[in-house]
Image 1 (tube, rainbow, N blue to C red):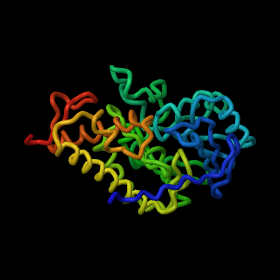
Image 2: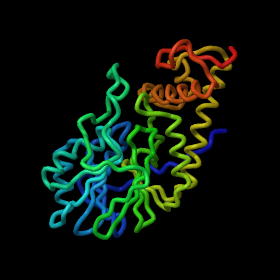
Image 3: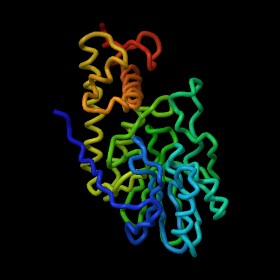
Image 4: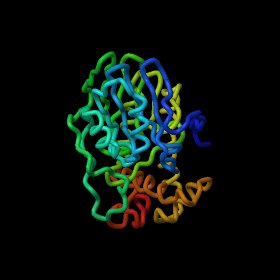
Length: 300
């Protein structure tokens, strides 16, 4: 029986409205709903007076205007970016133009793939003013965060631990409404699973993902995500026990309850799993491990 993941898909909000989440945290949600962003990108404002903005969001003028209205009379001292997908960082230039605040991130997005298909969601124009590494502290007036490098969803993904409130801004590494997409080549399943194990050891009592509601029991939740990933690999092994197969053949059987519109995204995660499984000698591919390859169990 599959491990249940305790999703929370309940969220009361209005687009463009600033919501007080905690004494130090406010949130404004962008009007960019999709199958991958849920209701939209939740941009967080941290602090009072001199504030940080985490994940400015997509390049939507109305969202930037809502953020500026939310901090009217205050100063933006830092812009923090968890990672550089197009629903997280493209609003940075407009926000910087209005505030002059510097950006802090792990680094630019990974190399653009030659096929142009698998990482179409990358913001390749972003370059941080300040590069932040694992364990680095970023400090403002009345708040401080520790950066935690959590590659997997993409190679430059960071979580930010807010020391004053025992909270973790977890970007897309952990989402309360869904599992995260891991899409090669910049997405890496081995890294993602290692990052889940890493974040499971962090003592934060509450997670704030960029999409959806806060996660109030993160230890239980992350344990379920880890179990889910291992069960996906067990599914792949079971599929290949019946003989060689392609990802296109496996996905509909593995995701029987999913909307077929999501099969393409599911196929990217299955590919990420298979690359990891080939690297760990549990599965082999006919040729390189790719989206169109035939896979089989080692020994077949």
